[in-house]
Image (cartoon, rainbow, N blue to C red; front, side):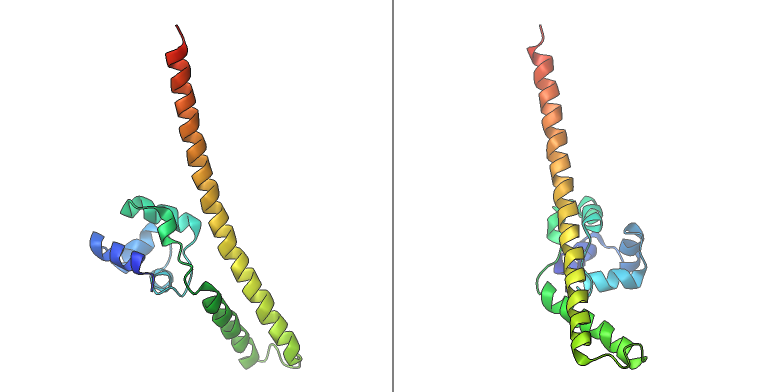
Length: 141
């Protein structure tokens, strides 16, 4: 469970549906975020940070991420096996597919982290530019 999302939502007196609306997603998708079935993206974290007035990085839930990603990838493969899509594939191929899926999901999480870091750098750059402009104004006669 993403306790920060849950506690923040309760503290603001908002419903899951209301938060889902703010994040522009379906209520079920938000519930999956709150229950840590899906990771919060950097963009979602930034919106939540504005709503709850706390640091966005707090929302990017990574505890146990690798285990969850592996379970998710294995579950997706199970669905394909049940509907016959993987019929005739050697077991090693299925393991390779799970590994590739897990790697892709990990890369998505890494990309979200990079997007957030880029946002932080842009904010730092903006602050430095404002400070530089203010210094130039005071230095002029």
